[in-house]
Picture 1 (cartoon, rainbow, N blue to C red):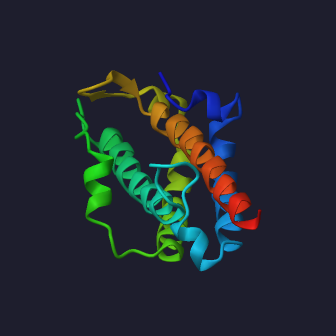
Picture 2 (cartoon, helix red, strand yellow; picture 1 turned 45 degrees about the horizontal axis):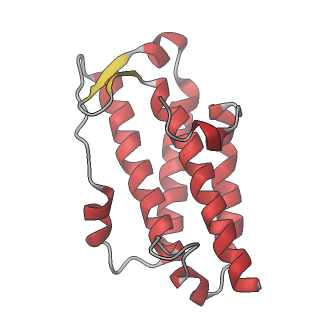
Length: 160
């Protein structure tokens, strides 16, 4: 059910959500200004947009997890990532990175504190059906690694 399961590659999700942001910070920290405008493939997001997307995702999924913990029979509101991106033309890559890192810093203790019972608490997604709260953490863990690989490609292309 996790679309990023392959990216996660069997890693412990809680370890990955704790470690991958530092790896993303390290890669983005080595980027020159021109690298933030570079994509990893034609027609794909550039590094700046990837970092904005990571911030969006951390914000949205942190809220979803909190709502699912605090609300019986919680139904998530799906969002269109492309529509969100269309409204973020002015956020620079380094600023988006900082926002993502701070949101993860806020959310990580909550992810780590989930009890076995809370991890299995169900919520409803209109497109995916019933899901346990732990699915959010698993998804974020693989999602981070997926986009880390893209950022690494962008940085390597800028150095080639």
